[in-house]
Length: 126
Image (cartoon, rainbow, N blue to C red; front, side, top):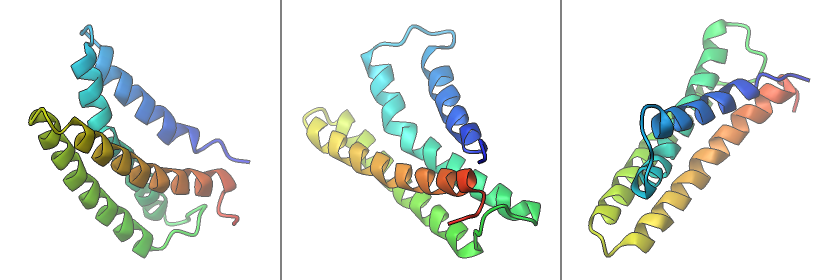
């Protein structure tokens, strides 16, 4: 069994914590802002992990280029959802809409992240 899936997960957790607490005492709005942008960070780490495997030349997983393109598309959709959630939150009276957009975005990008980590964990065996 491979522990390679721990690296992308650790990067996401570290980035979230660095953004939130390094040289700063976070308030509630800081936490909300960090959670809203979290899906973008998740999809970039997942895409980078998949891309790195493809770039090595001897991938431990069966990851065709089509999957990488799919991840880029998910990243674009995630960016749209992030911007719309941020706009809804800034409008003030649309907090429920912002929360729904953020939850959908987290679900979408987490699925991609879980997909990559399962592939890394299994070492290419499905």
